[in-house]
Image (cartoon, rainbow, N blue to C red):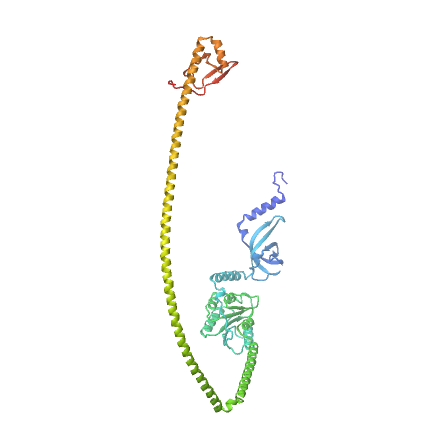
Length: 499
């Protein structure tokens, strides 16, 4: 081994291998043909298997979302075509195929075509429940489209005869496999629709996907979808599914099951009819017995044996009732007159009562109007008095405010005058003190001034006698009785010369 050769760890090498495979586009959608071995359908729905040939093998996994679309039941030994992506399983350092599709070798194209057609017709809405037509409960004519002398033909014929022999069976024999199957089936479907049958059975025995391919053709699908007569399909065995099953009005697992679906059971119908018959006979017998009993009662009635006597008795009773009605009508006439008299008296009394109440109401209304007028006048007088008092109060309040404002003005004016006098007096006293100091001993006088709170202010050893001799921020020295202070001018206040 050369010292210059680059040495990789296992992880580095496997990582480089993964990077290489991930960067190769064709490995993302690779198709591999081989034989299934170690196949396991996990309870989770995932498929785990090995794909091998006579020289190599590779591990594969197909997750449930993809495995559910596989159209056959995989088993060890099947030769299949797997489409998927190749990836490196880093922890084991192996290459693994993540499969997305699986088809049996040789039939892969048919499965792909089947799925494409299925998706196309599903998108068009051909499989929707609202397009499914209902089957009649008791059909009288049934069209049977099957192969001639086929097992499906015999199964359907036997089932129809056993379950519902009352219906007319119309055999529409057709080719169900090979090149002639598609036009033959389509022709029979159109013929059945022209015969105005109650329903149609489209059947065939089991077979491979190639054998059943005619039932996936677009022509057959369109003919079934456009049929005005409900169609039940029984094509192949239970595991076989064609597009004709999806688009038909009912999909049966077998031809026999299709015949069962479109027919009632004659024995069940017979039992129902027998029960209805017994119930009807029972009702009819009871009705006859009741009518017979009523007849015997009428025959035994004495009135019917001697009808003239019965009529005379009823006539006599009728005369009696007429006399009673006549007498009562006279009494009613007397009562009616009394009621009219009472009604007249009542109306007169009511009229007098109304006039009396109306007169009292008029008097009370006049009194009430006078009282209301008086109340309104009184209210207006009170309101005017109250308003005048309020105006007087407001006017008095305004006068008081004006007086207070005038008093405040006079006080401010007096305060200004007194303040000015005090300032002038203090200035005169200060000038007198300064003048007295100038004629006495300066040092002694200065000390006396210091005791009184005065100070000596100098700038550059020169005394400051005027505010005009110093400026803002000028340094000054303030001498007191027992020391001095260094200070700085921060402001100036020039007195009025007239003060």
